[in-house]
Length: 295
Image 1: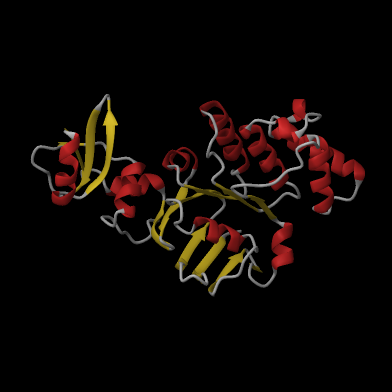
Image 2: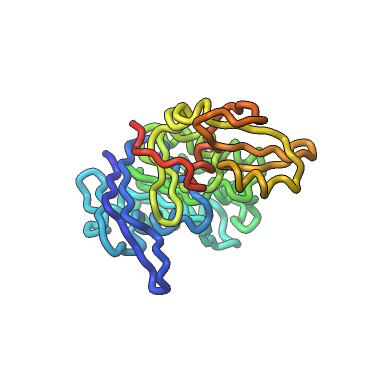
């Protein structure tokens, strides 16, 4: 069962073009949707999740028309938005049990087994009697995944799930997403490049509502090997270099400014850098790199 998106467009009443002719083919597994804040990722997620209508285009999930068969889609969809509300004084067990009832799991024994299994899966079973309001950010995100997995969904959408998590919780959350993404589609929307590099076998870069790149992360990195150049410069030289070269990123390294530039040919005074997915992302966002979908 693939998720097929064709020609999706959405313009808001203020004139913002949130989506512009977006087309993607998403197979089972982890798929990363990578882009800066305001790129159109959340609009796309909400549209796929049947929460808003596009102006044009189509979405299918297997044999289902996502735009017209919303109830059927919702039965096999799990969604963890960037921010989701909980009842802070309710225990994890009671709240997940409530969500399970809303999801249509009416048999009490089945619901009890489902809640227990999902809390075990998300490593929250030992905290099942604790009020959600006392959970850490990472625990709340794991609870969010537990509720998203109710009803054995075929598609799970997670929107900016690791923002604000400490390193330990981030690793734990990565491991959880990796486990659940083996047999179903898990669509991961994020602006954190390393999340996609660590987790996803397929990805797309989106900015200003347009898909700039799509394909396998390693294939896209291969395409820019030998085209990344770097050198240390003084801070006051940054603007000058940006005007002369296709600078894709600048960063401080031990108090010194390191710039990385994209070029098909060697650059005088630069050393060749080892290409990575972050270089692909920045080169695409800055308009230096545009590719057809990479198989």
